[in-house]
Length: 64
Image (cartoon, rainbow, N blue to C red):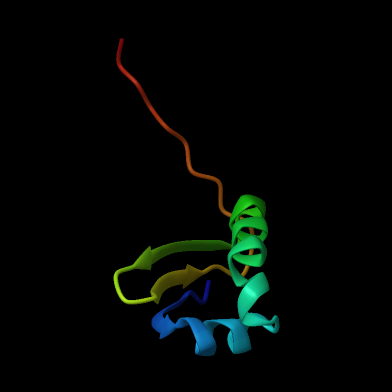
């Protein structure tokens, strides 16, 4: 499984995603919801991301 990790500014992240800058947050949220992407918007408009080749679902375990 090839996983792509990186940090990009907003302009380069929009180019990577193939959308305009103003549509970036909506597009990233949609891709993350499908399980292909995990991302975090950091200070200064930098996006740190992990892109998976197939959907990955995270499970939250609780001990009550």
